[in-house]
Length: 397
Ligand SMILES: Cc1cc2nc3c(=O)[nH]c(=O)nc-3n(C[C@H](O)[C@H](O)[C@H](O)COP(=O)(O)OP(=O)(O)OC[C@H]3O[C@@H](n4cnc5c(N)ncnc54)[C@H](O)[C@@H]3O)c2cc1C
Image (cartoon, rainbow, N blue to C red; front, side, top):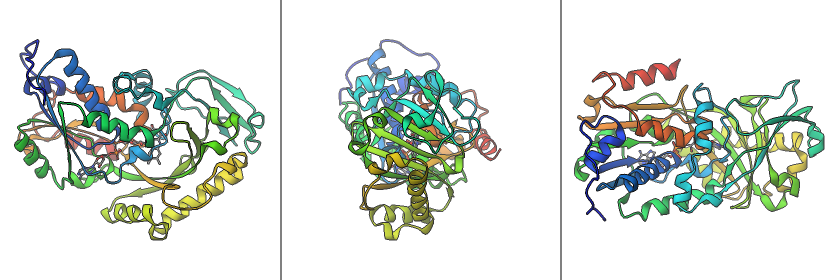
């Protein structure tokens, strides 16, 4: 590892996460989804700017990663946190980490059609671009009575981007990646002690509820059918098509140019709480016959919604249910995004920043959330019992 350079500046009283990292030069990151990848890229960019010795240990187990399965649509939808529109706006132009990694071409500047069978079409606050009312029939979607066209937008081809983003980070001289499941906060503190780090970031998605032994976040099941981009007509390759009439029955098509997928999704309204749910869905991912009935039903439901409401897109639906043509993804859901310091009694005095609850717009808001976590004032909190308790209260409200 290249650890020879000296800090170009002294920080007298490190108080925020990034100041602690600068001062100690060591960081452990648990998780390697999009959230932790963006967080890590931002630390690496800070190190490049300020030139301090840095070693990062990234620990992850590669299981149930929501990010790789995500639609990658940059839009603050499915989100109950009132700060998310601002986070989305801030994140939309925060693309430096993709440029640094040479991966900007995985972001496609697609426009969006919101379509509705109601008398009004809902467009989430914080969306990019200008909205203009359109007639969905003009786009081959006569099942809808009303639509809104957004003239700016973005989609990340996540299944192609994520392995490359991980490879970029793993190849960095300051980074070591360890493939391992951590079972408790005790495991995390032991790893940090062995590595010599006093600052840790945990961004472990929905399964953090087991790692931290708490009742939030929930796992929010999303189902995707992975069809063929090449079977979309030319006009439909240019737009994300989103029917958000009902959150529990969301239907969309997101074209992924780089990986040649047309992603058909949805929500299922199913909240998961038991480890056995994760195991069953993992098995169903390999063999659909082993998937839980609720997941198979949700998949059938999404296909029917597309056939009923967007039949013009039907040729691009997957023709069978071979592995790879469908995905069960688990969104980390809480009432609000969680950025908190875990209590010192839990962490044996380590500074552990926990990021979670990104929900259905985690890709959209990750850059802003990463920045919040870096700027998080660890000394602001009451010393004990605050972070955990606060997150619990907020998430149950
Ligand atoms: C079907 C679907 C479609 C979506 N579409 C969109 C969209 O269009 N736009 C958008 O903005 N968002 C979308 N989202 C939401 C977005 O994908 C998530 O909010 C985001 O990916 C969460 O990222 P994360 O890094 O927090 O979690 P994850 O991607 O789940 O990563 C968790 C990481 O933690 C690791 N980990 C967990 N537990 C342990 C452990 N005990 N030990 C070691 N490692 C562990 C895992 O291996 C993984 O690396 C979608 C989600 C789904 C499921």
